Length: 367
Image (cartoon, rainbow, N blue to C red; front, side):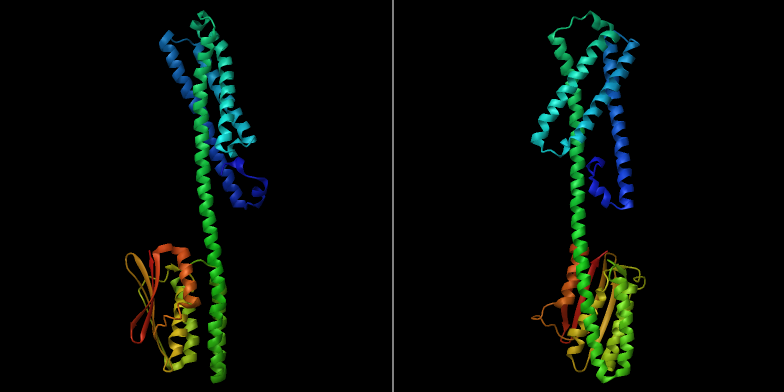
């Protein structure tokens, strides 16, 4: 936003980097303003001098006339701009702004005409022979009012355009902040859900095999460190995600023993690709909870990570049957919402029954 829009409260709450960026932005705009001021009035004066020279020949004093008019144009319009900012006219509705600008243009035009009448008679010999009358005075006022009005229109249109851009920027920043808050809220919900599933697995082991339960508790501690490490991240690498998944599956392997078979397939070069934390982990948890644990004979889990030119595909296949009445559950619903916040329509999560005893959770993310 323009520097003069900053309030004291806003400036106090800015970080150091924000303040530096704001000052640099103000410096660039201020530099552009002065370039436009002197460039515009110089161009106008040059055209006027050429016009006068073509009519009555060139006179050295015309240069004096030109420099004076450049200074006057810059000075008067800059005074108007300072008053405009100080009076907060830029924040007024258009209906209230227009009459104020019209009055200011009238006053500036009168000032420029009043100064140029004697200035022209001093620096432009032909004007000394012209008798002043109401028509001449009106012509002076009308000529200057055109240029002053043009300046005001350009300045206010630029301010309107800049304000519109700033409004759009703030809108997108607000939307991004809302998405970030929603995403962080979902991750905060995911951690207790993840912990509950792990503790539920260990609880089963305590009575059956205390030694394995101790090993599972150690693995759980590693998992908790991972959740603290990655829980605040928006994206992590597939390599880091698979380390979390491996620790979790080792707990489940202790629990199910020979009743659980695990296979992992990953295309080379995918470890660095970034995905939302606990994405594959959530799919694996869902496979264990609603697939493996429902069967007395246990089953298998197959994890596949592949990539083509346009998409990353993550799939978890497990033995079991889909229960359409149960719905997706907390974990998958949470994951779907996180994916929507991060990727919009470019990510798709599907569940399907591959055959009589195989369920596949498939996540496709556009690259």
